Image (cartoon, rainbow, N blue to C red):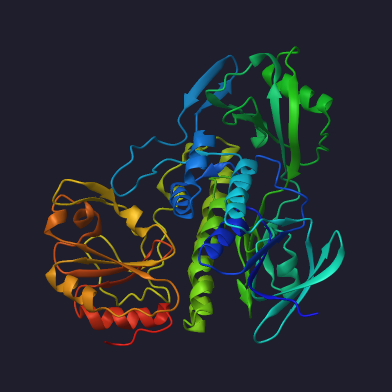
Length: 507
């Protein structure tokens, strides 16, 4: 019996795998997503969605339910004896023309997982739960995975495979890729999603009770319900108990009230912070993404967000190469994303080490955590010799802007960027002429052309993009600047396209 060959097989249906799958499916690819768990994840775990991730979710068509089911982070309430000190962990910022979602959004991971998987099912590709990858083999053209299902062993063949199957990744182990770093077996955190009977704790604060030697207790109210995410940093030699009675003893001790009681306990876990980075993100036709490639401490809300952007970076590149773009485009995935993960590891580790001592710089969250400043400048797709504008370099995030035409009608630039296509933006008459003559291949992602002319006189684009004169800017499908031309507009843009698309033949 002949089995179908899929374009991409994704192992792991967490936020990374699901976001990648959504991106691939909307490009018309044949995708299968498997996960060894019997259902979506049940715990709150990673609960912070950074502004850059919100922009990705908008593009993938899942932002509205994420905003509806989440909330802004509350202030901290530091309990110091009989006093409670309010502390804002992150400054609240007004949306602006270039950054529409400037604030970190709180949504427990079990809701993020379900919303992404629901979106994937709407696109006709439901997650296949209860399917475990056992082994894989690859040849120059395909990858074949042997999987265990309820019906027994099966084989799935695809042109590419992506391992998004977590820190204990079976895909990474099958490839033999070292996972370099450390695990402190003595540093453990007990987490419980549970209600508190009687409303004895306000839900407008993230409550923190500091303790000696960095052992703190925290209770963060999760949105739209009565659950708190309880966090207990354990002593090195402590044997944690996960029973209701044991958890109640902990809560009563920290609140100094023998009558308080946990109600429903939805999920519990004990984890050890890992700090690890895969030596490579690729082996042949197999790629690693998310926690399979990098694991972080929970501080700063970086791990889940970094994984989502791994998938967002890889998705369009897989689709382009499958359509005939140069195969070495896929090499840029590791070259662009691994340095980001290494930087994030350093940031989250520093934050985590300072939490126990209540170091203000560790508690505070700012622009570094929001991931809006990530750039691929200097990488294989963004050479340092490229043209630039007064505000942007090739490889930078493409900011949003407000466009206003001659009739006064307003619209967002992100509305033009949304979708699986490339976008070329021309400012100035010379660039507009070059854009009109710019050839584009028939295969692969399409090109949307936008001329910002005098009829957009009140646009904020000129300010955020730094384009007072002629400029032709190519925006990649993942929202990063793929090319900037302020001289040699047509020929240099065509040369850049040859690295990103199947072909760019002159007219």
